[in-house]
Length: 396
Length: 227
Image (tube, rainbow over all chains, first blue to last red; front, side, top):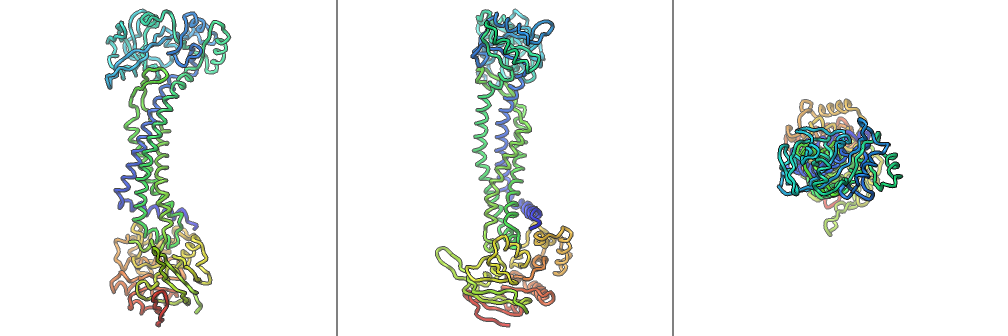
């Protein structure tokens, strides 16, 4: 059996040339697998997009300081004195003689969603002049910055696209106050783009926060500087704070939602995958039974069982690959770049993100298609190879 | 002439539901090298089963089949497949050509099991097609050939690897008289001129006349031999 490979190639080529005679069944198998792959890649692209948004928000050389024991900004609280002590730490980069440290506070306001009109939670962040210094990708793209001391806001690009009434020039009412929308900004696709910003002092007054803040964001010289920054704050008896890099903070926040999307995505894909396996099985069983006499003839001539099994599996996997490619295309054309928003459980506020169909996801989709079609081909292949030759030769 | 096939106390039973069907019963037979043997008998007499057993397509319930000194009933499936590829050429009633391959491709099939290079395989297949008079049809698919031509391609496939034994199951059963005669002429020439040992199952007395010997089977036993 020195020509095992050419045996497999010859039998497979012969099988494939007769696929046109089994068009309907083959199309069902290809479509089934394409559907499963499109759903799998689509659902996981939601997770990828969500994670990418939170990842982009998280610089490794930017630290967030919260009150000790707080998991998120919402549950944190820092006094004005504490934010001043923090801002004086020596590890913080100085920009124009001023430390790049931004004390911020954060409330949640109700804004109607564009798609459904229902109210959703959106973060309204109070910031000072330092806020843009700790966000290197920040860029004003429309209008102007808010004027300190006035009831003015600027909105992130994501928030503006998902929520109604946030166009520059419009006015919105939260609580007893009317706010003018004066500008729109972007921040490299980060989570900040899902927020609305205003002057911290104005926000403190409007929401009766006194002079308190919830977090301080600081720019460090390098990612490794976070350790010395942490050490410096932890020895100060006036402070009781938790320090983590922005990157750590956001990956912590995205964990629960990523896990949920993963679980849902894989469960749906698994259940649909079972259906697709039956489609592939049916196709390959009918392919094998249509060719029983041919297979028996080849085996009578001395072809081994292995080339017969391999050729059936190869045919099934080629159909699976075709289905996989179609499914990936559907997912890419249908989902990639679509913007959506969802509730971030950690901050109880909406976060907007774009579905991201990444090359790794496409590879995952193709692998899944190949795995499904392998299972769909192996059993009919073994059956073909085990059927007694003499009964196969009698088939018409 | 030396004995090529030696069959001793060959028995073959099939289980059909709860019923045990005895197809061949303690059959003894010797076939010399260079023989052209026709097996005749009514349907169910066991002639095709005997042919399948001699060709290693099936296994006996008991007894032995020696071909050129090897007891093939003792070979495992893989070894039996290799033995068939090296020693036996099959000619089927329905030709059993692969519809997706050309005549040339069909004839080359058995050579894929040898160590011959692609160009050697092409040459050997072309020579076999020339022998059966179908050189000009080499690139045609089976559906573009007549029944007689298809069967001649089947014979070219059976002889391309130069086997010792040619086993033909009703080779003219699906052909008109003229095509059948051409096929029988070809088999006779392979026996006379190339010394191929041929065993042919047939219902057709005219086909059987071409053989050197005719064996009649009934209910799994040899009942008569005519020359």
